[in-house]
Amino acid sequence: MEYPECLRIVEERVKPERANKADDVVAAPWWLFWRSRQELYNKIAALKQVLVRAQTSRTQASTFVPNGWVYDQKVIVFAPNCYGFFAVLDSNIHYVWVVNRGSTMRTDAVYTPSDCFETFPIPESLSQLEEIAKKYYSLRSQIMAERNQGLTATYNRVHDESCHDEDILQLRRLRVEMDNAVATAYGWKDLILAHGFIEGSHRK
Image (cartoon, rainbow, N blue to C red; front, top):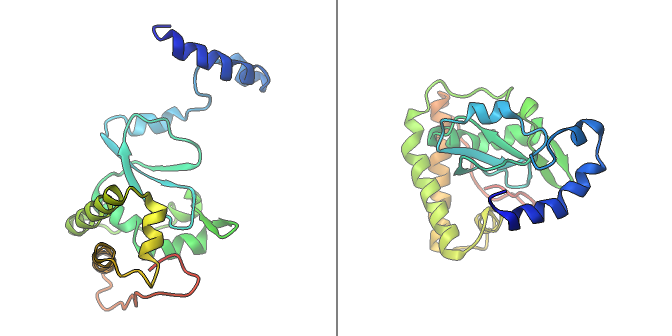
């Protein structure tokens, strides 16, 4: 009520739609988000930022966002918010797990938490991944800001074999270093990840 202009917009756009919904929706206060999953917000209440990813995405890339947002049902929110955890979730190791365990929508991978996350083993220690993950994330953020591009456009360049821009080359090198560090965290010191370009692939 303290913001009448905002209230007017909500009354015009939200209230009529709620009136045509099921009884349990109509019975709820029409100005509030319905089924907001309070258990999630309780879980992340003390965090300054959370790690999220779009549920349906060909890149399956994660990013940190400020806590306090209203998260749509198509956004996967992860309570652990350290960079080591980011390294694991954005590694090629986890990506292969996602495309094999999750579902698809057209040509995009769909991240289903029950199949892609709950079944995925996380390394016992993530501390050794913090430094490389921060470097990778910082450079990726810098590239996106300087070029005014989002995650999809940025990764399209990363996965374009004909792209030889120095910032993208550096990001690729850090990506390989981060993937190797994740493999080491699992104890796979002799694993050859064989990074390269594969026709039709959106990953490097």
